[in-house]
Length: 373
Ligand SMILES: Cc1cc2nc3c(=O)[nH]c(=O)nc-3n(C[C@H](O)[C@H](O)[C@H](O)COP(=O)(O)OP(=O)(O)OC[C@H]3O[C@@H](n4cnc5c(N)ncnc54)[C@H](O)[C@@H]3O)c2cc1C
Image (cartoon, rainbow, N blue to C red; front, side, top):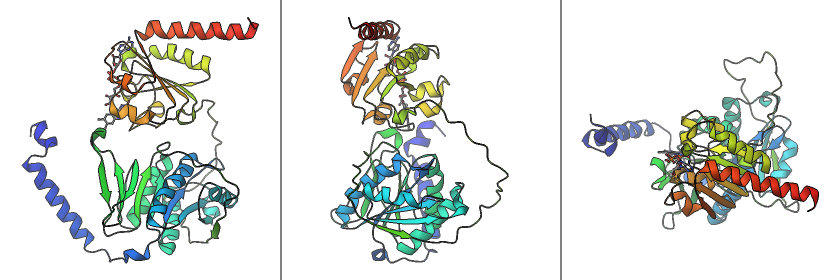
C-alpha cells in the first residue's frame, strides 16, 4: 500500500476504523452500565517524589479548579503512598477541598499496579466525575492501569479542559497528529473521565495557608505487587543538574548546531548564567543530547525566565514547550525562521559567532562587577 493511502484515510483505513469501532462497541456492550449522575467532583491523583508533592500535581489542582467551578463541584485529591499523610494539609493550601489519603507500608515503594489500585479503590468509593493524573514518568505508567480498571478512556497529554455548553459534558482537549489541530474528547458512557497532563502546561496555584479543607483517611486493601520481590535498596545518587522543567535559564540547541560539539559552546553560556542546556527533538533523535532534555510536545514543557533558542527553526511542536517561558531569545542564521515569531528578542547570525560574543560580554560584565569599575 502506498504511504499516502496508509496515512491519508483511503478506503482500507476507513474499513479498518469501522471494524475497530465495532470491536470496541462489542466489548463496551458487555460492561455494566453506570449511573453517570452518581459521579461528582474533579479529582487529581497526586504524586509524591522524594517526600514532597511534585509540582505537576499542584499544577493540576489549579487546572482542576477552573473545571470544578464550571461544574459547580469540589476538588478532590487522592494521595497514596507511605508516610505521606502529613502532606495532605499542603494540598489543601494549594486548592484541594478534600484530600483522600491512603498511607500504607505496602506503598513504601512505587509500583504502578499497587498505586493504581489504591487510587482505584478510593475512586470506586467516592465516585469522582473527573480524574486527572500528572503525566510524569510514574503518572504515565499508572494512569492506564486505573483507566483500564474502570473500563474508561483516557485523554493523554491534554492541554486544556472545558464544558460543552449544551450537553454539560466534560471536554478534554489535546493536540494530536503533530499539533496541527485540536481534538475535543468526550467520555460519553464511562466514569471517571480521565486525562493525563504534562508538567508545566498549567501554572502552580498560589499557596494559601488560610485555606480550609477536609482530610479523609482511608484504609484500602492494597495488594502485594505481583511478580516482584524487594531484595534490598540501593540509594540513588542525586543528580546535581537542575532538571530543565525547573530551570530559570535554558540554553537550547537545535539541528542547526551541526554536530554534538555545538553543545559545548551552549554549555559554556549556560554555566556562565547558572542555567542548563536543552534541545529540540531533532538533536535528541541524533543522539546529541538525551531525551530528558527535549523541549516540546513530546518532550517537556518549560517555564524559564530566559530561553535561548539557538539554531532551532521553531516548529509548532517545539514552540508548544516554551509557551510559559518569560523571555525567548532566538539565534538563527535564517531571518525567516519561524522561531522569530515566538521570540522576544532575535539575533540573525551564525551561532558560532553570536554565542562567543555573548559569552565575552557576560564575562566582561561579571569582571566589571567584581572590580566595581
Ligand atoms: C508528533 C510530533 C511531535 C514532535 N515533538 C517535538 C518536540 O517535542 N520537540 C521538538 O523540538 N520537535 C518535535 N517535533 C519535531 C518538529 O516538528 C521539528 O522537526 C523539530 O523541532 C525541528 O528541530 P530543529 O529546529 O532543531 O531542526 P531544524 O528544523 O532542522 O532547524 C534547524 C535550524 O537551525 C538554523 N541554523 C542552521 N545553521 C545555523 C547556524 N550555524 N547558526 C544559527 N542557526 C542555524 C536553521 O536556519 C534552522 O532554522 C515533533 C514532530 C512531530 C511530528
